[in-house]
Image (cartoon, rainbow, N blue to C red; front, side, top):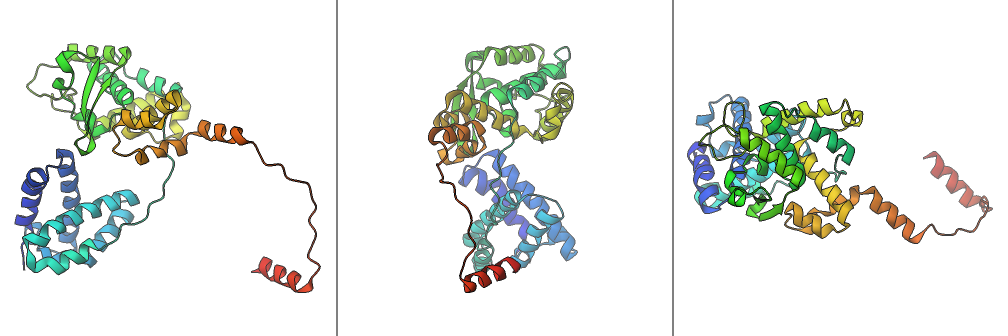
Length: 334
């Protein structure tokens, strides 16, 4: 039997950041997955987490955990597949690290991902975005910070991980006209900013507490704001903005919805999906095509381009053949 703890520690602290050079965000995401998995297995086997062994995590255990993620935790299929991807990565590492577990690793890695529905994205229209950006109170320190965060997230189409990791050095020469972003997959991009966004950022930086923390946006304790912290503040301002725009109450506004809103408005302004992909930092334009499916204006332009087909009028005539009539009757009753 092989203890899990030493190998899981080496995987998260050495293999991922040093050998594979993945981002700290990816390491954190994988660590979150294994926290859930280890706790689940510990409760199921009635053993302490430190006493668990790699052999305890066979396909039955992994499948049970994935079911737990979907049913009991209420996660979506994409989240379930993300947990599975982290587990597969660990067992790919185990293949050459622990040869005696090779067969088990191959079995776990063969667990298939589940097909997910490709639903339309949620986004805010311009009136809703304006109400949201105006919601934070600029007369308070937290309101000034929140307005800057919301402006920058929407203007640059930032992922929440990109926002909370943004540092002062990411504004070249302390100029706020552009921002340097290290995105997903270590893809860099430099974006210009609107004057309104620059003003919101400048107002925050003037009152930002003096601290050795390099991140731009800090919480009330002077530490870098977290993903959950930003989501909490966003929900608060959505409720406030809903007083001016009640339509916000019918939408589920998450931090990523601001990124979607930026993409949809950029697509409407330029009509070029390649420019949207460039602005958002997508690795492939296929990732950007989801915004075309959500764009109703684009569909209306397609409909107007070729018009409806001319159909000659006619009248339905029932089949005269008795056999065909019987088959149609059976088909209707089935």
